[in-house]
Image (cartoon, rainbow, N blue to C red; front, side):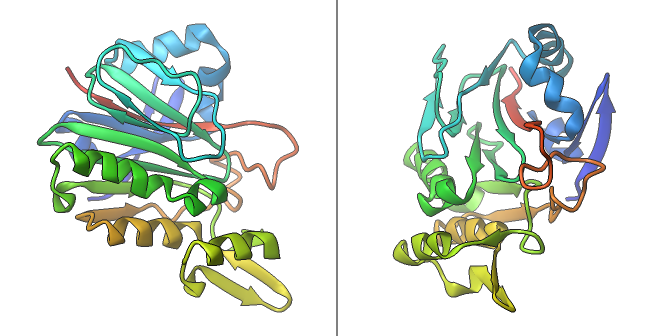
Length: 236
């Protein structure tokens, strides 16, 4: 499958057309999504355009809290959602952290998680996948989409971050030394977590939010606090 950038109303986002046709509406949005976060009217219009009935946008905590949405649950805080309820758009906000979407079209079930370095250390993507597996979904039937986030080209980290990953047993291969600086590959770290769970197929966009100023906000690059959203919704 190939990611495609589409425009819907005033918004643009990357998605897999074949997955959307299969009933899993999803997207990794560009800067155009900032208004959805801050403007209730834009939010309601967005829900209408994607064919949903409700939206969940949580206060994110850079942790590993993943909520199951079955019937009417609307958590106020957390960093991940596993969705069984149809018509509800699960949303996470990022500006360098990785958005990860998981799905099984047959069950059907989908998940979206916010995986910054802290969430990755706490293995949030693995936790969401584990919740799906616990429902009886075979790991090999779960697919993962790793969206745009800061790449190893730009993600210079300190010894505190290196130590945190080492203590949790991550491979040294997620780091790259350049001179006296150390760069973290968040994509590789999350991919390995999912591979260790036996996840079937993992698609990686390989788009760096820090490099692509034309498309994305970046917390490290920008002085303002803009965020793009990523979303997933099971069609009713």
